[in-house]
Length: 441
Ligand code: FIX
Ligand code: ZN
Image (cartoon, rainbow, N blue to C red; front, side, top):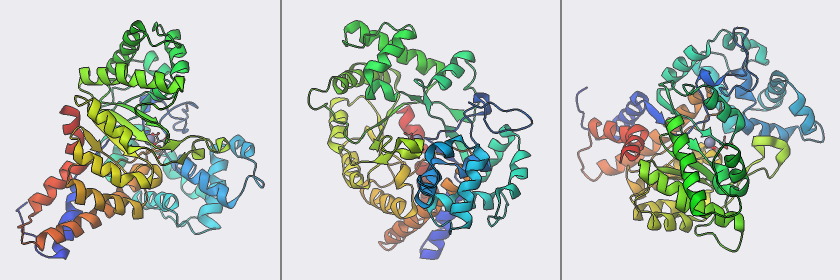
C-alpha cells in the first residue's frame, strides 16, 4: 500500500478506520477460555456443566451486565432472585430477551452489544424469540467458532484470566498440564485472594503443600509463597500476574488492619520480587466494590473511587517492576493519566467494566492521547462470552476511530505531513505492540 499524505478530515477518517479494521488486536484481558477448559453450552450432545468457555445466544443474553439491567425493569418483588437463579440458562435468557429486547427498546450499551453481535453473525436482530437464533448456535463447533469469531472481530490473540484460587479452574490445570496450550490463548496468573484476604489464601496454599503461615509472614512463609507463584507461572506459562483491588486499597496500607498489612507484605516481599525476577508485569484493576447486592451474583458488584497516589507510591518504590493499571472510577482517570506521565514503568490500559461505554471511552481516549500520545493501551474487551468479542471490539474501534481522526486533523492543521504510515504505526502500537513490548521490556 502506497503511503498517502493525509490533509483533510475525510481522508484522515478513512485512513484511521482502515488501519483500525486491518489491525489484529491482542486482547490483553478477557475471561475467555479454549474448549480444553470445557463448555457448559450443549454442543454435539456434549456438555460440561462447570465448563469455562461461554459462548452462544443464551450466554450472551444472560451476561451479568444484562442481569443487572433486567432487575431494574422486573424487580425482585416480582421475580425473587432465587427463582431467577433456579431457572435454566434458556429460561433466564428468554426472560431477559422479553423484558429488555422486546417489551422495551434495547438501547443500553449491553443490549446494543447483543444486537451488533447478531448482525455481525449475519442474523436478524429483530426476532421476538430467541428460538429463532438457537439453531444457528447449535450448529457451531466450539473450536471452529472461536476461529470464526476471532476472524470476524479481527482479534489476533486472546489473553485469559486464570484465577488459581478458583477450585474449578485450578483443578483443570492440575488434571491436564496441557489444558492451556491452545496457541490462540495466553494465560494470566490471577491472584486476588493473596492480596485481598491473605489469611484464607494462606490456609489454602498450606493445604496445597506450601508451608506458609496464615498468622505470621515469616521468611519461610515468604519463600514458600514465592515458590507457589513460580510454580503456577510455570504451569500456566503466565505472561503477567493480575489482581483486582477494592476502592479502599491503599499502599502503604493504612491503619492496623492485619489482613491489609499481610496483603501488603505479600505484594512487597512475594508478588513484586517474583514478577521482577521473571520480567513479568503486574496488572492492577482497581476500584471494584464486590457484591454490594450479593443476590445479583457477578451483577452485584459496583464501582468506587480509589487512590491513585497508592499506585504512584508503588511505581516509586519498585522501579524495576512493570505495572499495568486500569481503574474503574471515572473520577480516577485524569490523575492516573498524569501519574503515567511521571513513571515509564506504569502502562495505563482499557476502559474497564462500567467505563466500557462509548461516551466514556471517547472521554478517556481523547484525554489519554492529549496527555500520553500513543503510549497507552486504549482498550481490552473483558469478554466473558466468546461472541462478545464481535461487539466489544466493533464498538470500541468505532469510538477510537472518531477520537484518532479528530486528533490527527488537529495535527494536520499544524502543517505536519501526516501519512497513512503514521496512522498504521500508531494503531499497531495501541492495539498490539504497546502490550507486547511492555511484556518484553
Ligand atoms: O475483575 C475483573 O476481571 C472484572 O472484569 C470482572 O470481575 C467483572 O465481573 C467483569 O466482567 C467486567 O467486565
Ligand atoms: Zn475482567
